[in-house]
Length: 139
Image 1 (cartoon, rainbow, N blue to C red):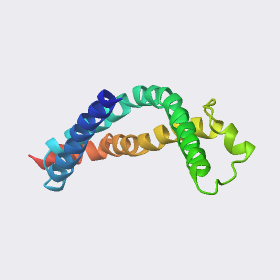
Image 2: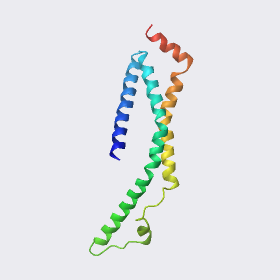
Image 3: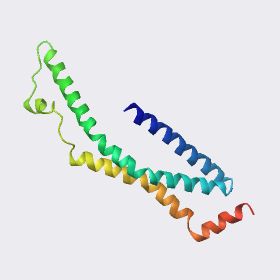
Image 4: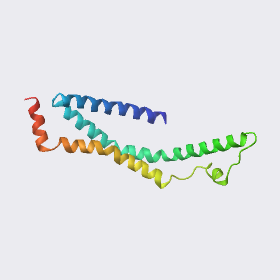
């Protein structure tokens, strides 16, 4: 788990640096700016499938974590003086179950939303008239 967080942190730092430096260079009308932005977009699109797989893989630990939270809440209720009642639905939530359709949809939706900006960026930067304009920047 910690390895995944570390890899995510390093990848996020690299991508955000590419995006920031590419944006600054583009504002200064340097041809390296759009090149860095395209690099960012290609890397981000290339990471979409591994991130989707990791998202589905993390659904199992997420349901265990959710069940643990319910279990801890129920234990706390029972430890009170006087004990608070725990319903059957709350007891059923203590056992980890399968990921729901909504949880799976959130993983897929998050992946799709994460692909919108890089895709639009590539569409904008690869238009013929935009490429001609960028080629004139350092001429």
